[in-house]
Amino acid sequence: PETTNLPERGGVQEIQIIELHQRSKGLDAPILLAIDKVIPKPILFHLRYGNQVRMAAAHKRPSEADGSKWVIGEHYLGDWYPETADRQVLPIALDLQGLYEQLVRGLLPQPARPGESIAAHLERVEAIRRHERERAKLDAQLQREKQFNRKVAINAQLRTVNQQIEALTA
Image (cartoon, rainbow, N blue to C red):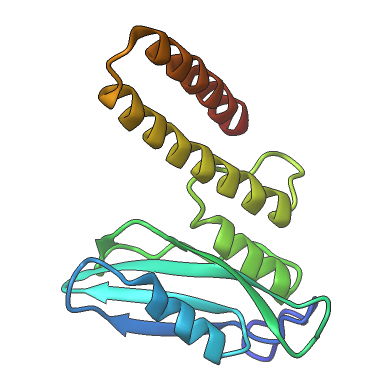
């Protein structure tokens, strides 16, 4: 609160920013998860590879059952950009929790709907990911299948999954 001039709220007393220098462009999610588990504060990762940088974060919130523990969501990665590029300004927020939620939302692949809470937004993004994995599985199954009647059934399932993805992304 002292450096940002924003009051704390919702258990967010500070936001940690950790810079990691990578040896390769790929990233192992268990590394970020291990760091997130050790530090009981919201964390934004500043990943650096060569002369490129990107941000990564997982939505963290205090546990409702035990206030001393934190619930960690899935990690989301931003795009790579040159380190000499102009940085984006911080979003407008009334408190540290709002600032953290807006920073995490900036990393999500789908934009938020008007009035959508961060929990609903994260749930929708996860549902889209689940349906996309299911679509890939059905596509592979369709390619392997030889019988016409089974291909018709798989296509019907595939059409349903595609409609669900469209509904979630609209």
